Image 1 (cartoon, rainbow, N blue to C red):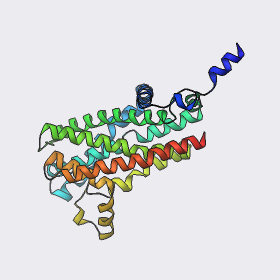
Image 2 (cartoon, rainbow, N blue to C red; image 1 turned 90 degrees about the vertical axis):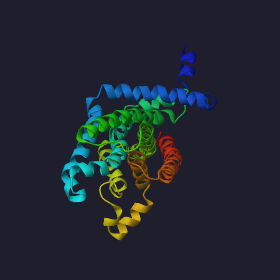
Image 3 (spheres, helix red, strand yellow; image 1 turned 45 degrees about the vertical axis):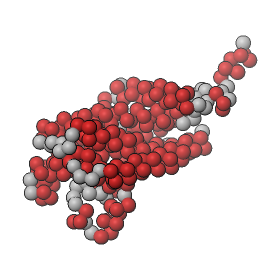
Length: 272
């Protein structure tokens, strides 16, 4: 009996962990666990609902008159940028904190002993974020419509803008996952996770036209991947050439996932 129990508690051999189908199944199971934790934690839900409201109202009514001459015109300009901002910021600090807490409680050690891929717990957390992005964007569009925002293209383009925002938020979400598995401290993760996206988000044309910025900031805007995402969102929602910005956003999303996801998994394995 003791020998049998010991064998059952040993980690499964690496061969049993692999396979795209198994990885996908395990990821969605753990994403469901992440969403269950979200339902039981009102703070994470409020982050997804309140942040879009705060940012949109704050920008429109504080800066609308100064930048565009009227709040209504500025709403049309800034809404696509706030859409990207929403998926970049929504729930990512909460997710990184949740990862750190699971590590400290030994839950990730339990995952390690199970016949699942080592990347599944991290991937499940990021996929769970994507569901929160849907809630955040729904709230944002509802508020934007009430304030007077109108899509200038069509429904398909608007859905493409939402999909692109979720894809880019998913890709950039791996940055906060990497921060969580490297730092493993709630206070540090909260501070770094909150401050890290701001140079990426505000060093763009989201709040003001690029030509009004100093030269050094324009240079940063040109190489900032979030700039391409905002340009793509603006083209899909308001009209204009969309193919180039959309392609660049998808390319940057692929690069971010290809670089950050393996680094996060490697750091997680190294610290186990």
